[in-house]
Image (cartoon, rainbow, N blue to C red; front, side):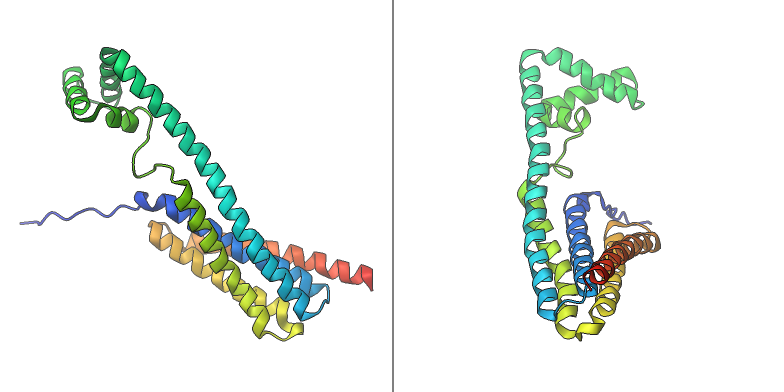
Length: 232
């Protein structure tokens, strides 16, 4: 006899995982790119460290504010849709019942069965049924601005701390190369962990984040070299 087991799904992780991965990736790439560019210009190590620290603080605040604003906009839209749906359920319940029945018919249920399912779900929680099946709003994907903001800020700080740490322990001449190596290794690890956590292909995620990270750092290093050459 086969014992039923609870299925493992990853969709409930998409909200915080997206914010965390975006924050960490941005923290590594933006801070490492800035450090590489400034160091390539031939400035003092203290100046490189100052630039990296400023990037960490400004980036973390920017990520938190950006996530909070964008996710709050999504939350406001959800609240508006739910308010309209609540009003429609109060003023035209029969129409809303038919609307929900039509949704289930489109998904493959027989009309009589669709009507019964819609009736039972609306009797249990009409707003939740319409929010989920008509509007696509559920607790799993509900907008959570504060959670997104804190997650982004914390993950950005953690990501930015890696290239910043490389600056502290590296000789001035080796800052660009060591920072690049540490950052690309961190990006590869981030890609692997995020892919594993989300149930996605690991190799593809690793290649994607390391490619774009390397491109960003190479571009800023070139700018730093050009600036140093023009100044000298």
